[in-house]
Image 1 (tube, rainbow, N blue to C red):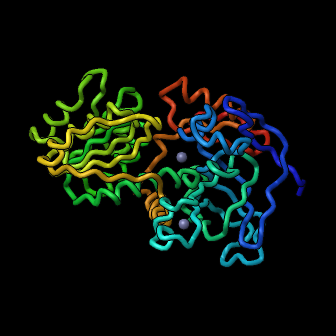
Image 2: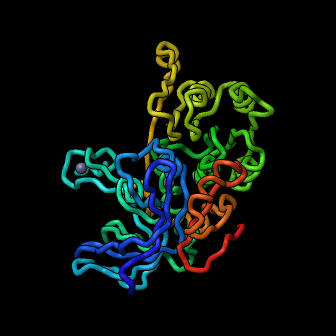
Image 3: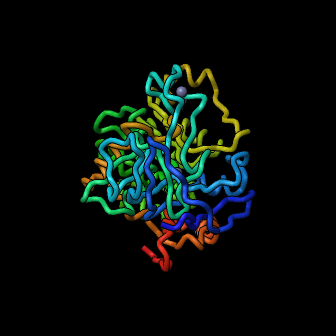
Length: 353
Ligand SMILES: [Zn+2]
Ligand SMILES: [Zn+2]
């Protein structure tokens, strides 16, 4: 094996260079994975623009990946060269108050592969063996690279703990469509997805939305959601956009006694207005979730590999690693595109899915 690999290195905000870098060296408790696909996520754009992880540059980003194990450390148990895998990207210190409670995401030493340390927009990535998940035969490598976003959606759905037959409104038609698919699996009805782009709303319908609301037709979707839910508002609402305005709408379209899941990430200094008196009198609840971790990954793999959640309507393109920067810019320019996968496999061309 040559000692170098191709990687897309985020050098400075707005600068990505695809170049040869050393292949990561594993320790006794790590595995080396040859990447098949790595999905591009909004976080990768935020790292590119310098909004996120700027102190970690230069960095190889990429945290939604699938691949094949090519090397295992001496302490690794139950994994072999040739295994098709993905990896939970979330790491805590392992021994603090939160880690002991299984709340890794709240650890003060919390780090994510491809966000705070080198990730998978490259030919190879290394990961601790305890975070590796094997991919079942029935699951293709594109879906395997989509386990991470699915685990995030499942984590948020678990926080809602929604009984069968509950109405749900979802703001956002990117990962919002994936929330719709998960809510359908949970027995929610009706599932209402709110977004602007009508092509994306068509995808939301394919993925389980019963009703879609375009903000082009309904600039204030709150009234529309109330109309569709007996005048009350939805039992559950998921905010998956990430602006103060949509967060305020989300709370307004929730029925008294209902629960809001905060999922969309806003800018650091954004502030949401809440009237405390209204909140008290309406007994509305707010849950929040920042990533999928631990068993959320197992659950995501189970639901994807058994076709309970089919994410393929969200898959837009596969592009070669050399076009990393072009792919990021394309996603910003063309809002019809949802998920682009990068492949480092030599000689690959852009494929429209
Ligand atoms: Zn992501
Ligand atoms: Zn910890």
